[in-house]
Amino acid sequence: MMQNENKGHSINMKRIFYLFIITTLFYSCSNAEKNSLEGFKYLEQGKDMRAYHFFDLALQQSQDFPLALYGKGLLMFKNPSTVHMARNMLLNALPELEGKYKLGAYEALAKSYRLYNQQAEAVGILKRAIKESVDQPAIYLLLIDNYTDLRKYTLIQRTFDSALELYPENIDLLKKAALFEITHSRSLKNSRKLYNQIIEIAPQDVESLWKLSVISYKLGERDQAIEYLDKLLKLEEDPEKKSQYEEWKNLAKRKRWKPSL
Image (cartoon, rainbow, N blue to C red; front, side):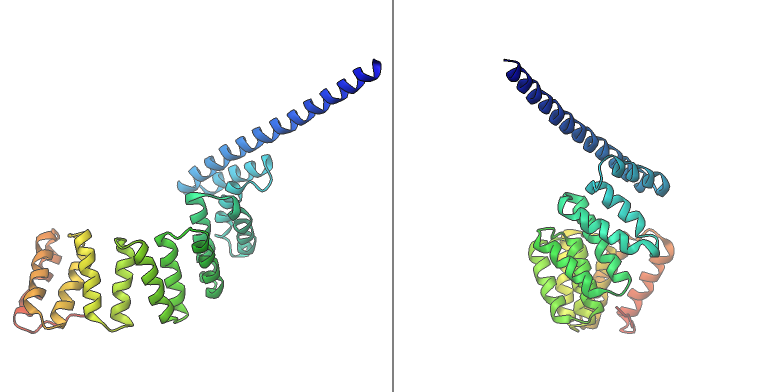
């Protein structure tokens, strides 16, 4: 009987111990998350030292807590001597990160590699992001930038095709694709098609209207170019810029305009 009581007591003690461990872990993670979010709040305000304090506090409460590793890693990227450590932090955090934090970690890693002329590594991390379905426009834009550095023009075109199939109305992608058509493909007509898509989405996009006026003029469509300049005149409020558009319009009418893209 005494033996059974001792056995029961031992089992209860084990249960209490396990419950204590689970409770401690729960509150540690809960506090770590709270302090990590506090760190991001200060990071957004540009208060790096305060942010660093809260990320460190979170890591003391829960070692290798993903959000804290990510936040501290972002801060450490700012110091060239700790870039390698920052990369390791983000790589360790990546599997557990979600949503905007996962996207941010991939972006930060890719930008870090590119900053130090490690485009091949940047491409590798961005391809990993796409494979893991973190295929946001920002990832494709960074991939295109790195392929541009490497002069991989065929891969640039393929990346544009994939990205625009997923995000046909993303203005940043459309503008970069239109510029690529001008600078590398030398196709003003393809570029115009892309800028027209932008105007359908954002009719008052000044940059696209300007590009369309120049492209139309270079393609010999003077009336169309003047029409775009008229739209710019209606949108512009700055007197100096308005005067410049008027001058270009008059030059276009006299076939003396020499615009450059």
